Every structure is written in C-alpha cells, then in structure tokens.
Length: 602
Image (cartoon, rainbow, N blue to C red; front, side, top):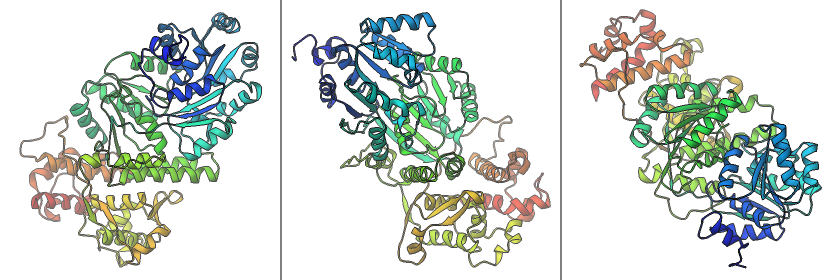
C-alpha cells in the first residue's frame, strides 16, 4: 500500500509536499483510517492537522473538522484549496445561498473536508445535514476547550459528546497542543473517548528560547528587547487587560513599530482584519489578550512576549508555542511581578467558578510562579509539568545561558515571616518593608508597629531586595496573598520549619536591569547621572502606585532633577529642594535620601 496512489505516504508527498512523517503521525493516521478513535497531544507546529486531513482524503465521505476559530477557517480552507483538496467551511460569515451550496456539495459527496464552528454544529439543521451525508471522520480541534480545567473553556464544546451518540460508527480524533493530566482526563470523559488510542508526542520545542525576568519598567524593558533582538520581526505581545493592549500598541507605533491591538472588546470585523493582517504581513506585531492566537498557522512568528503573568503553565506553553512554528530560532520573553499575582488571584476570587475550580486555579497559578522563580533549567521544569523528563539542562533558556546568582536568604526570610506574623498578617508588602526598614510613616505609628521586635531589623537590606524576598516566599508557598484583606500577606504551614530554624532557603538574587535612557520632554542636564535619575523616578513610581496617584503628585520632574544636581547629604538639605515641603520631607525624604546616599557611596 506504501506505493499506492491512495496511501498516506503518497498523499503526504504528492498533496502536502513532505517527504516523510514525523512520529507518531503515521500511527495516528492508520488508526483513523481503520476506523478507530484517537486523542492526540502534540506541540504547536508538530503537524496535528495532517493527522485528520490525510485520513479524510483517503476514507470514503467527508471529514468534518470542529474548530472554534471562525476567523481562521477561511485561511485554512484557502490553503487546502491551493493544494487541490476539496474543502469548504460552514459558519455564520456565509450568506444563505453560499451555505446552501456547501450543504448540497456535502450531500453529493463532493467534499474531502468541511470545517464547522461548534456553535454551528450544535444546531438541529446541521445535525440533520450530517445525518443525510457520508461522513469520513470527526476531528475535534483545540480539544482542551472541552475542559473546565483548561485555559480556553468553551461551553459549546460540552455538547460534542453527542457525536459519539448520534454517529457511533464514525471515527473521532480529538487534538490539542496543551493538556495536563487533569485536562486530558476530562477531554476523554466529556467526549466519551475513554476507549480511544492516546498519542502523546514530546512537548519540547527546542528552537524556542525561554527568558523570564522581573518586571521593573515594562515599556523600557520591552523596547530594549525589541530593538536588540527583533527590530523588524513579526511577534505577539500578550497583556492581561484590553486597555493595556490598546496602550502598548499605540505606544509601539509611536516608537516606529507596526503594531495592532487584538481583544474581545473590538468589533468582530476589526479583530478579523487585524488577525488577517498579522497572518499576511511581514514584521507586524499583535498586542493581545489571551483571546488571540489559538490555532494560528503563521510559521515565522519570531517572538512571543508576555507583559503580564499568564494564569497557568498550560496558557504559557500554548501562547509561547505560537513562536517559531517553522523550527527556526524564536524567543519566548516574559516579565512579571508580585502585583501580577495579586491581580490574577483577585480575578480568580471574583469568578463564578466553584470553590474546587478556584482551588485548582490557585494551584496552577502557583506552578506558574514556580516556573518564574526557579534557578535551574526552565525547559526541564516546563516539560516536567506535562509529565516529560529532559535528562540534561537544555542550554537554551536564560537559566542555562546566564546561571542565576543565589544567596542564603534564610535569615532574611525569617525576618519577613516574623514581620508578617507580628503585624497579625493584616498588611501588604509595602507596609511590611516599612516595618523592617524602620520607616517613620504615619501608618507605622498609627498601628504602633514601631514598638514591635521586627521594627528596623531589616535596615541592612534595601527595599527592592525585600520585595524580591517577599515575592519568592509567596512563589514558593511560604506565604500567600489574602485577597479579602486587600493583598495582606499571611503565613502558610510550609514556613514553620524555616521559622523554627530547622530549614534554610536559597533565594535568587535579582540582577538590576541596565538603565536605558528614555526620551523626556526636557533633555536632562549634562551634570545629571542617568542611573540616579531613573532610580529616583522608580522610587516615585512605587509611592504613586501605593497611593493611587499620578507620579507628579509625589514630586515633579524638576524636583527630581534638582535632587540629582544638589545631592543632599542629610534631611535638612533635602528640605531645601524646590517642591519638598515639611510633609513630603517627613513622608518621602528617608526613601529618596537612601537612594541618593547609595549613589554617593557607589
């Protein structure tokens, strides 16, 4: 049969132009051709579509592909038509006459493949049409959408078990690039595929370089990444909110990049146009929420960047997998911070899911945090999550290429835990740092925290390092964020041995990013040190975020510039700066003076 014109290998070569199958494509194809069911877990770019396209061409009748991506069906169909395959799609974008013609072609056995959206499939008239036609197979693409534990849950997918009930003799193949053990089991259960053969190809994408770093100034970090690594490449940038996608896309255009937003708040026509442009144009960047990208076939996406933390490792893997489908080198770049964790946990808490579902999501978020904070090979950890072992470090992630410096954080961790405990686990990171660093803020004296044993015991560690300590303690499960108390940090059972002196902890040392000088409305005077200027701006930003006010409410740029020039040595000299009144001198002076003192001592 290998030399037969209707053999899988002949069709692979003659129709699709590939010389040979990748394992386990040939086994999957043989299973479906022989009438068996299959569940296929295969990484993005691994060739999943061939596993149902070739059987659909060989088997008698038409292969029906259920896909959630209406916007992509036209491109998929056009590509197949160029190969000479008899293919069409049925979805809400068609006018009644065209839809009727396609239905007639299906009934007359004139199609090899028909793509249908799940919403369309669930209509009575569609089911009646299928029952009157000769069907070769059903392919359920993006099968993780059926799982309530998956990251792209679609209610319409829950009804797809009817295919087994209404068409028991027709083989079914469910395919996805991402599913942990729990999601996989739910796919099998929901689609009644318990007896199906399971094919799990390797999850590794060795051409993708994983890079994860601490969020310090998102726009500056992104700009540096793009200008150094991808000045004219196509890529996807993921953000958590719709507003942020619009803001980043606008800003990138101002920086000379060709960028478009994509989120569910845009009209369907705009989303379709932006997606079509991304697929067709070179060097275009899409800035998107997670609503974008599922099933994207663009092979030359050179980077995927995350400006916010994904909720799960599955989401991260699925989204980063859209880079480098052509097998050429690609980057998966991400920045994250503790604020991302608090925001995601708040979103989970406010969701309509059951308590069990919320707990499962929290565990998945913790696993995502763990991937960020590890000091060993990221690829080994990523693959281990999906049950795959990589014996040696990959040599193509930031941890392998630039090994992380660690330090004995045992004593610092005990101080942090003690501060949270002695303040009754009612306060967030900023206040706990104030306690540890002997701040004179109003809040300290309001609650009498200047009398605590923890007050001032951490003066030897700067604020940024303390933020790193708290972030890593949360990531590793020693502390958690109490959303009902507006981000208060509380102790977890895991911290007891550490507090009692029975355990130690190595923490990663955050490397401060090299400062990139930004354009300002007024050029900086030549005597101003750019590094000091940026450090003072960062200090101002943190105060502004904590109080929910614009940065200029703390200090105007002119005040910061004067600090850089005068370099006050004590609080009295600091009070002479224009814009520094007594209240601001008392409230903000110690933090800004500390930065200036560090600069003078360097």
